[in-house]
Amino acid sequence: MIPRKTDKYWRYKIPNQITIQVDTREQYPLLFPAMIQIGDPELTYKMIPIAVKTERIKLDCGDYVLKEYPRECIVERKASQLEIYKNLNDSRDRIRQAKAFRKLVASCSHPLLLVEASPGELFGNDPHIKNPEIVAHRLSLAIAKYGFHV
Image (cartoon, rainbow, N blue to C red; front, side, top):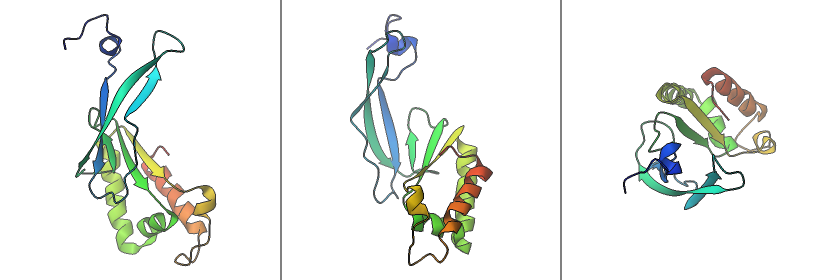
């Protein structure tokens, strides 16, 4: 289909479809809707549909990337208090995670850290973690150091 200058998708550079690339190492990937709707730039109360597709691919950094905008936003997902604790507190894993965070920040203009834990879960008691407060402390240090959007 040839875009016309009267087409809103063409005029405002709105894609009619986006593809979310999911890292193959994600054990339990997030589910995405088949379609999203964004506000119409010209008409209030009207929405424009955008189709959403996903594909599994080995990503160099991060867990989720928009295929059409790979340098704009990359999402790194942390699923639990224990995962954050191991990534930011274990001596070997901390070095690996720091390298991954540096690579992520250098790869895009808006690095995003998705934490799937509530504040209550971050400070909650876990038998594997002696001091749960250190999880939130190390996480806030990493957010400040690398400039993540949370």
